[in-house]
Image 1 (cartoon, rainbow, N blue to C red):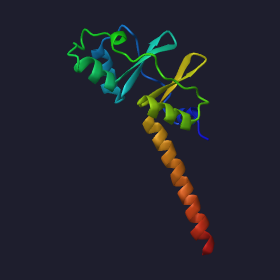
Image 2: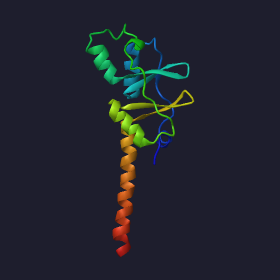
Image 3: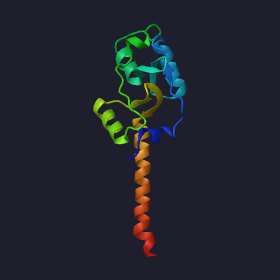
Image 4: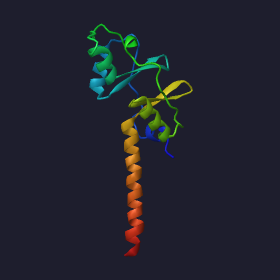
Length: 145
């Protein structure tokens, strides 16, 4: 059964992190420049929150807050659902579905080691299914030639 570590092994290692005192505008600029949908809000090496595109929409824009003046700690999502590298992807998917989230920080010994997304899980499951289909096809049809 695949784990969060299996996804992290195939992804870029650095996770975008922002401090609690940064502004929403700074966060939006980072997310836009890096083409990502979330930032981990960190203090030292620990995860204290997460700031996502959904937070921008629901907690800033919809409330008519000024992104130049609004600081992350006032609009971030906390507490944050996290997983460990050894967490099975089925459990990660279940947590994401239940909590209606798309990003899951991966933490080991209270330190951030990566981030997985629902898209990452989908891509891995799709690859596994493709390999199974190819194996079954070869078993059923290639062996008869």
